[in-house]
Image (cartoon, rainbow, N blue to C red; front, side, top):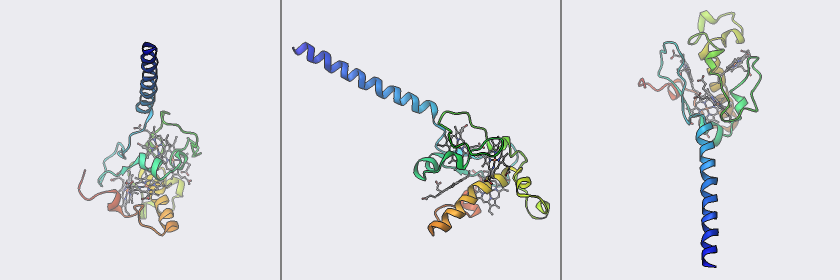
Length: 152
Ligand code: HEC
Ligand code: HEC
Ligand code: HEC
Ligand code: HEC
């Protein structure tokens, strides 16, 4: 009787261990990094901005399709952890930001061919809207809030 009890107990323990290790494995395999340095392959004038990817998806509950889309600009709403994801620069592949005189006469889409214009439209665009709607300043809009003064 005692032996049987020990047998059952160890089986239960084993099952629990297996359950957790499989769960852990799936998690480490598929997660995007918690924080992403928004570096792109051109010379940056400002300190690189960081996107708290995990906070944006988990805490702020923003859907993948708010930021990721396909080659037609159609939101990738069904994106799952572990899927291959293209960097913004692969499509918005002109270096840096275009503004002022040089940007005059260009359509929004033409300006968005520049990496920083596309990224600013996305990040700053949402932050402005969200702050206004929530009467808040929590979502950064100021240059130095995303590009800290000291070069990191
Ligand atoms: C607030 C905007 C935003 C949201 C929301 C978002 N992502 Fe991302 N994600 C990004 C940006 C920006 C990058 C970096 C792209 C680059 O390097 O140009 C990225 C990168 C990734 C990467 C690649 C990481 C790497 O190191 O190669 C994966 C995978 C990913 N995202 C998956 C997801 C999934 C799944 C969701 C939804 C649960 C999601 N993302 C939601 C903006 C976002
Ligand atoms: C596979 C190519 C591709 C990738 C990768 C890509 N984009 Fe785009 N993006 C497009 C196309 C095509 C459009 C539609 C043309 C336009 O409006 O500029 C677009 C549109 C946009 C728009 C305007 C959306 C709107 O609703 O008006 C923003 C902002 C943007 N992209 C930012 C980003 C950011 C940020 C990333 C990286 C997380 C990214 N894009 C990755 C191709 C891409
Ligand atoms: C669709 C909306 C949305 C988009 C797109 C978005 N954010 Fe945010 N972000 C938020 C919200 C909402 C907050 C503040 C939430 C809070 O504090 O409650 C925030 C906060 C932040 C913060 C300050 C707090 C933290 O988590 O570090 C930084 C920095 C930031 N975002 C960077 C970025 C960058 C960089 C991008 C573009 C790659 C981006 N965000 C795109 C909605 C967005
Ligand atoms: C919500 C965050 C955010 C805010 C606010 C923001 N940026 Fe950016 N910016 C980015 C991200 C992300 C990139 C992509 C590359 C990087 O991180 O440097 C970028 C890229 C750039 C680039 C091209 C790369 C370089 O360093 O040469 C310039 C220039 C720039 N930003 C200037 C500004 C200025 C000026 C302001 C204020 C008017 C500003 N940004 C506000 C997030 C932000």
